[in-house]
Length: 306
Image 1 (cartoon, one colour):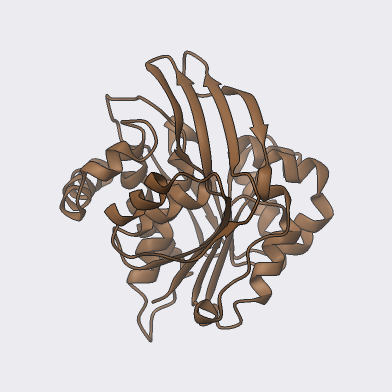
Image 2 (tube, helix red, strand yellow; image 1 turned 120 degrees about the horizontal axis):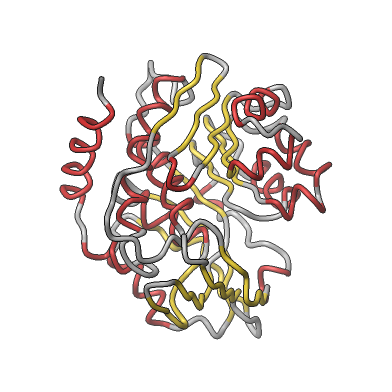
């Protein structure tokens, strides 16, 4: 089934306690598409500037199934750039700089050839922009959005309007608290369901994730990796694994938004993210194959099975 992702593609500078990486490929759309491509085709809708290095575009060739027809190179524009420094525990970071570039301009348009997309993931961007993409995908069967603290603070009305139009929402535990005013993640998740979505996925970093669904609750731990190099993009690859699995397992009589479907998809997202954290940028994902994901999934499944 067709999966489409919208979001950012940019150039990152990242400093962690283990080292640093300058001028590397980054952005929510990039991480998501790389992860979901292990499960099937994925379509990208994003915009970069004329300064976007050709070698970065070539990096996508290492992930068969990533369709770049919706990646716009804007004449005269500058590519989104972002830098951060992680604290010792890797659970928090300081943003060093953000240069919006073309991300601060009009968003890319969904190509006509993408209009039949059934699965839509709205990676982190202004809620009003996310809503605009929904209107361009009339045949969608599952729509999931990501958000962040910035939009909760400066565009809450737009976000609340968006939540009435999506099936699922993905956000961090602190963002869930900020949105709802509730410190307990379960209570926050239940409150978000009242705002419109059928389910909410709350990311809790090294403590895994929490699914609050209209038909149940599920909590999964993170995969216990020993090699923690760079957490950047883990949330986006987590989402890519979730949506990639759902899109690849859609059948005529199967509900991709059901509690059981989302629950199993969370395990796949967790496994993909566990590889991402083991290197900077896409470096670790470039090294692995689907067989590596399957092997770690079986290991992870045996850990959580009781």
